[in-house]
Image (cartoon, rainbow, N blue to C red; front, side, top):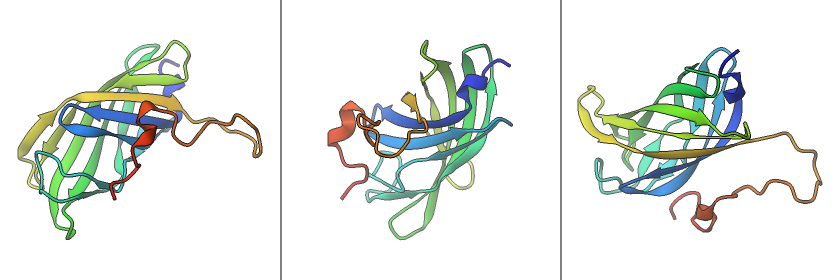
Amino acid sequence: MAGQEFVGSWRLTVAEAEAPSFLALGTFGVGGTVVVSPPPVVPPSPHGPATVVHTSAGHGAWEATGADTAIVTFVLLAADENGNPFAIRTVRASLMLGADGQSFSGEEATVTDPAGNVMATESGTIQATRLIAEAPGISGATPMVATPEAEQPLWPA
């Protein structure tokens, strides 16, 4: 079946034009569901409060559009440092599987307030590598962070 190569768990590096890159995790299910876990606390964005932002996991759906392409839509909730909801981020992305079957790329996002009014349309990129099962104690195992952003903390201090 087309697109089944997307099924599995992935390490994501997300780069947006107006924010620092960050790491996230995503899992694509056989039935077309997707769950994405960004950092729970992210730096302020130009479209939100001037303080740190707390984010939920993202939940949504994905669908194959070809042998090595897919679309995905998922929704995350955002709150300010006091827990007050201020945004709903809907990510709609077109994905292209890498020739190795172990990577993919793509992204676009829309940010709305809790009432659904569009606050911003952002664009950026996702670079993903598949997480694979590895036996414990294997030397040369995949490092927890294998990206150029590895020098950046996973979460702001």
